[in-house]
Structure formats: structure tokens, C-alpha cells
Image (cartoon, rainbow, N blue to C red):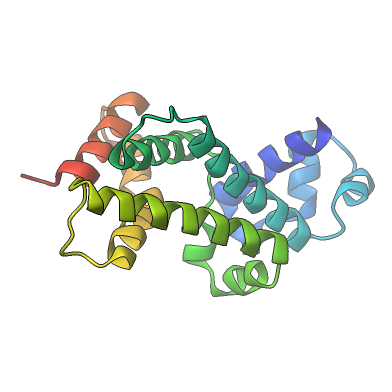
Length: 186
């Protein structure tokens, strides 16, 4: 339970400060524990961030596992994007690899993280292939274009701008972002 609180605080702090400005002191204060207690759980800031990102990947995989077996490929992608947007709107989804070369390098050296990312990527690639075969996704687009466009939607800064500057609540933001992703701007 304490590790979950630590990882929650890490995700929140990363979302506000980013990796470079975040300190172990920030996390200890946020959780309400001493810095030595924090180091009993995680030996470094890098380990802490890697574990937070692994937990995020596990959450995405669990979300896919929890979907009804009859969900179409498009419904699966839409449900996963909705999950990611909701996690993000509550401050639980830092997008470190896309914003920091240092963090990207650090994460790619972590075998547990890379394993989770590859597992999620392969599952999504299979879903994209199924979606194309069923005519739910464009066959004229390469799989990687669809996948990386999907990934980009999970870290689109529009979400934060809408949350800060629009009069939309979180549910409306999610629904509009899903519509833009899956139906376009027509």
C-alpha cells in the first residue's frame, strides 16, 4: 500500500515538475514519509520513475484484459484511449519518454519496462491488424502510423489545455478527444 502511495505521488509530481526538477524529497513530503523510508522502497529517483512507468504499462495491459471478449478492435482501442485520457486528467499519466531524451534512454535500459512496453505494443499491433481485417481501420495506413498516432493521442497536450482553459468537464474532454481521434474533424 505504501508503494502505491509512493508511485501515485511520483506520477503526480512528474506531471507537475517533470523528471529533472522532481526530487526524492518532493516524493517523501508528498507521501508523508521520511526520505530514508523512501529509499527503503526505491534506491534512486531513476528506479522510482521506472517503477511508476511499469505500473502504468501494467494498468494499460490490465485495461485491455478487462474488456469484454466481444469488443471489436475499434472498441478496444477506444476503451484503452479513454482509460489513458482519464488517468491523465487525474494526474496519473506522465509522458516522460515523449518529452525527455534522458528519461527515454533511462527507461530503455530497464528490462522490466521494455518488456511491458513491447507486450503492450504487440497487443495493440494485433488489435490494429484485426481492425484492418474487419474494415474498422484504414487499410491504406501502415500499422505503425496507426499505432504511433494512437500513442500520440495519449500524450496530446490538448487535454491539459482543455482542462485548464475550456469550460468542459473531464467527461466532455474525454468524449471530444475520442471523437476527434476516431471520427476526425469533419
